[in-house]
Amino acid sequence: LYRSYRIGLTLNTIKQSPTMFARRAMELACTNTSVYSNYSQGLAMLMGDLVRMTDDGPAMFEWAWQELHDADAPVHRLRRLAALRKVMAEHTWKKRLDMIAGRLLGCGFDKSTDVVVLSRADSQAELESLVEMIRAQNLPVRLAIPARAGLDVPHGVEVLDEEQCALSPGQLFAGSWVALWHPADRYGEFYLSDMVAAAGFGQGEVIGKACY
Image (cartoon, rainbow, N blue to C red; front, side, top):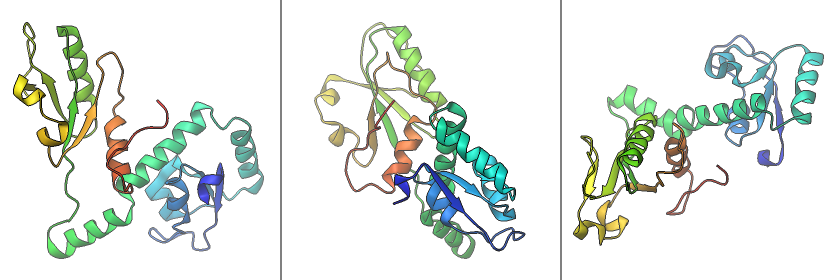
């Protein structure tokens, strides 16, 4: 239901608690809906300026009016995206249960996800471009490429021989998420972490992006 709306309004009756606020704000944010709220100390601490927050009704109306008339402007689109990423990375039920388990049992249940980027490099420049984008990702990632003569392969890059290249990615990297990259494309720092976050909610074996 929330995904049908561009803007969602949430109101908090308890405003000065550092922990109590309507969870509706998180539910709206994780559907990429822009969140507007009256002031809440807890919401301000957790989400900061990712939620448009004020007790001034006319000011809130003016903010909402501007966003509705130019919803895809970078200032609005990037704020919604940052809020979505923050909730998916820090404020899901899985994250909360993992935090409680860590406090009570001394260990969490949220296991790290192994991600492998499978690509090919036909030149040193393409290899360097791939390595640069891998290092820019905001989670640990492995890079695997087919062996090619003449390449100066940096430490940490997995080089696949002919026998390995004959195997399917599922056989070669069992238990890992595998992403196919093209060296001519550009992949931002959140490209893979967005997909890993989506994996926590998806039921399929393949995850993609609707736009790029």
